[in-house]
Image 1: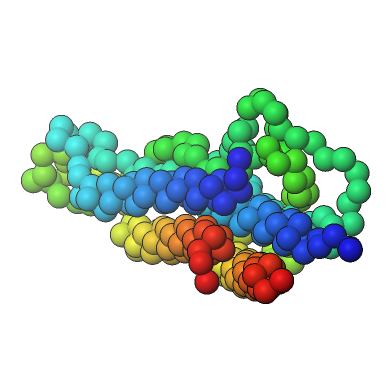
Image 2: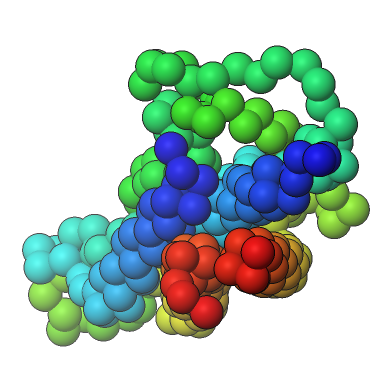
Length: 138
Length: 127
């Protein structure tokens, strides 16, 4: 298969992976305050995403795929709030183990990687049009 | 008359450049993959000096190689950057610099082919 077409597909797989990552970040941020609704219940558990390289048999390109979307086992934050519906018998509420700063850093890194993949797609497209230009009448 | 090899040479270089582009795309796409080491193709001089017959993929189950049998060798790049805890050593900046090199090479290549083509046409028209 044409290597430039392979490059386009590989970069597209990168775009997909990074947008999934952005989705996970937004889920984490949106649920940063999601507690349980029964006494002592566990709150939202932060999600993590892992990528894996995968060689495509047909093209030989190194595609990226989502290896795993897992739950972060870090301990939950605990806050004293006896009036809360998820408070246990001592009055403590478990809050999600989401750190907004970590999510923000992850988001800007996903952004950067997405831009790099877009750059590759742009360039592959330019290479193709340069080749097609050879056939034009000068 | 000596056969003109320039078109052949130029198409070989274009093939090498586009294979390299595919490899760089793989590096960029896997910039956040744990355990991934960046790859690069062998130099163009090595590709040119190779005389051994190359493998051609004739079936979708054949690994590596492509339908043209260009057989540009791809190897893990030994990196000077310390490997991060995730086992990944891709530097996006380096990859973009390489993409720039590919672009310049491709621009030069197509410009030369264009000029050469024009020369041939000129010779054909005036004679």
